[in-house]
Length: 288
Image (cartoon, rainbow, N blue to C red; front, side, top):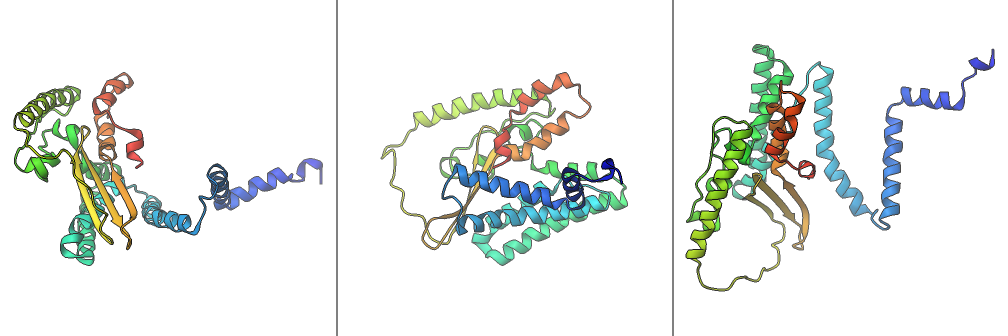
């Protein structure tokens, strides 16, 4: 045996990583945890570990299902939207009909969407990428949705407070392009100025602020507001002591990034900047 035939430690390590692909991932995880412990001393605890596991379990379930889909030769781009719909239905219906029925309805909605995808792929022979991409687009919100002709505005769909008595006209356009998004924003600026002027002219008397009491224990709260990019959903879960146990925010950008991808199909690279800024999405808002 020559010297060139003798495997070096580096070669053996590379071979081990190829044969055991999970080892590099585990090593990277340990390294990241160590860096976190160095940068934030005392952050590692049983509470941190439990909370991390709670967050990781849903993602692991989605990743396992997506892996199974890819092993069968397909891909599912609608999984994020379907998961959001199921979570929204559960959070919205649970206070009214209870947790088990709300979960059942949410799962039924996910099954229906899955059957639609399956019918399109297996029967109509639509490519999985195209079929699930189309399903994912049902989450378009805000000016991006209204620029496609959808009259979708939380202030009108789920009015609360002053919006129960003073509605804001929904500004829409039909073409779904850069002009439509700019035109809708221009219309909304005019409507917003008029709404503010009307409210100032009829401003009621009374205190300008009110004291906020403690949070109710063991409650699930859902709040939705229409922000300038579109609807923002806040979901809070309190523990037995009335403290926040979990808090989740869904930004409009989470829904609209797929709309940007569809708008850029077949377009020149030079069209990207203006199209991208017409959506004006948030990178960190997608990761909330």
